[in-house]
Length: 610
Image (cartoon, rainbow, N blue to C red; front, side, top):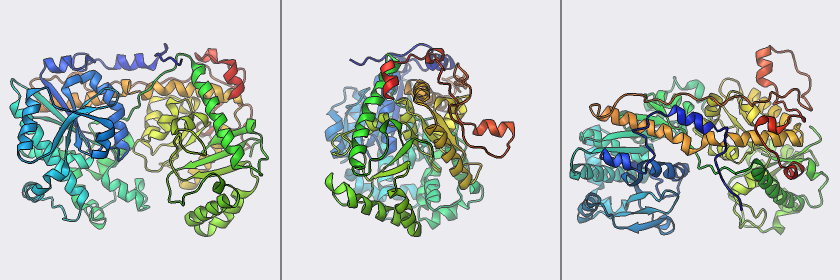
């Protein structure tokens, strides 16, 4: 049976030392919060509602939130019947104040549900049926206009729903605060503009609560990047009202900007998104709250290496069938990634419109036709050349799979996590990626990845790791150089990776997996706790202290062993300075580099399979 434990020589100890607010942040399942009459509510459109990436953030963070806050912690969102049926246990609340507030809202015709989310942490939920309050929409719009001069068009159903959710949340929080006995301290944390209206209303009505607003990506930023503007080089040049108006999102932009400015504390998920918010929302984040994952550590290093070998064999089986009749390469010299003797197979996996087809129809001419049509659609006149290139028996082969993976897929028979574990490298050189869960997921599974310094993940790793490449984190510079140079850097990194020996890849995977604790919510949860602390200090300065609000910076060191030259280096290049040469030099490993010197143990069986 696979066992999990937290290994020694842990980054976790350093992070624990950095968090010295022991009294406020006791991980005692809410005992400290209850003793202080402290109540924490977190609101998002994605609560128990799988409609976006923030769903992953809220769901994965729930265990560490309940470990700290226990019964004092509630998640608030819209009621989605299909999700509730499979993910929620509907209950009646035990706490008399919660029960009284729900009865009050129900007496006015509002359908509101209480329950528990059936996930790790088992957090309490308050879910509003948005449709049940639609009859009050005109009243809500009039109130928003009279107090903020933000008008919402009739046809914008998404903004209408956001307005209803915000009003219902503000109603609930206000009534709950007023019905509590003693001196309560209530905090509301809202994610994104869809939930942010509640913050505007609470501050507008001077309700005595602390507030936090988190943007995971600015609304206008998403639109500007989708429009192929030179986004980051023009951040200080955009005429914001005009840009929002031209895209018919001015009212949404105003809602988001107002939420950011009315909250006591404003946070973003990464430094790069913080730069974006400072220019587009005109407020610098008070703190960065990076996204984490729930990491389960294996008791021995070789266990995750063995999983890589098992799932790689399943990918091998797919490749044998996919290239049936054209199978002219050695699977032992094949890398699965996104001109050496290695064969590189790149998988492009994302949903796209397709016809239904079975295994047989994916072979031969059917695959060639789909590849021709897809490439032609994307690249226009270049399609024919790319198509012909992809069909040749080249050392680089591209497979496009137009749907997400799951274990019932007749081609792979693998879940996404299993597929990732079977690959050698993940390639995600994003231009606009406020965080980036895909390279983070690779990291916790011990799979090296390529990201960019315009992704939140890339910025975070650059800030906290002394030498990211040594740990299998290749960061492409897309911020300070042109697209051609970035593409060349990406190609060079991929070529360098293909030149690594099998043993070097095993050593690198060990190092990559070691970074997983850096991305664990048990460590990254401290940033959310700091944000809540700042909000409580700002809202209730007489009752909460200013001491040690910001976590100290922790840097992940270089690997213990400093490897010499690689077994195979790149071709000659023009002379460059020592600094530039060091920046672009490939990761170096020595076949004699003993993993035990690197605080790793290596299973000989895994060495043969990987």
